[in-house]
Length: 417
Image (cartoon, rainbow, N blue to C red; front, top):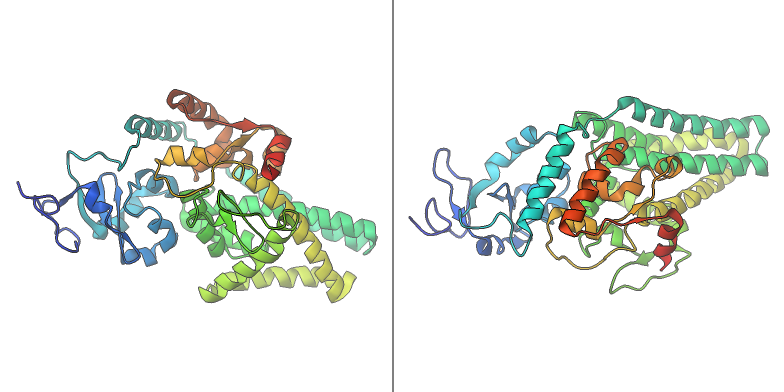
């Protein structure tokens, strides 16, 4: 038998796709680890080795997302992010260059093989329980109550006039509506509502663009990286949100009371617009323009241009507070640091915690109080988190993983701490 890296032999300087019918070259982890450079990236899925160097730029989730898993076993990430594995595997075939040597472990480094096997069994159990199937009525009601709040805010101003009471109430209702829009577009971005990814994406463009004024592509670009490597410097955009604040073991927070009101109004607005222009996402830009046109056409007859702008700013500031406190209460108090190359389940649990559920908290947070379940299974519809939670708890107990659940107020206070 030849050396490692050839079809029964040793590696050349750069591998191409294996010829059809030919024996696959075999590789060791020490070879794969060398391919984690900007123009040279390999990864492993189900013990098969893929060269993604040239294809990464065409990856629908972005080159950074797939690049974060280079020189690693990406099997669990591959299953976590993709709905239709049969469809996605067609794109993998031309990238296949070999497989792990038979004596090599499926994971590089000191990872717990039994833990990984048990997590995959847990995922299979969730699939057998049909927990990845969505209740379309649940999500239709969510969209309906968002549209009802948008209408109610406008009717308050229309019927009562643009006074202080009606304006404050309208701003609060619009802020709640915008917060719920974040949750619904988040569900769509994870393809957890419709059986086809395309349907989810079109619906996400409507919710994110027409109802919020943001780009769906921009959100997915940054949010999928967060899921791939939560709380990891230089890989998770959520732990570096300059210039408002920086987070983590080597950072200094700047203006703790400035960050929450300005995140959506300043950071997100500027970053979102820059992304659409630089990446030429013209469809998203048109969707966003339709939101601003609708908002100003709806309220300028009552407030004029300046008053409508002030109403918009008030809504964004209120919404931004919700976004910072609700979305980060599960992450910021947890471990933030540099890449440690953990397995999928361990890396997600190290960076997440849950908040005690109730009907109100489930609704108000968009079920992000079940952050552990969401991070382990990003494409699972959120109404099924309660059902999978006991299985996740049992899995964590078996392997000594910390399954942390906090009271709501404690979670908020821990952000400051």
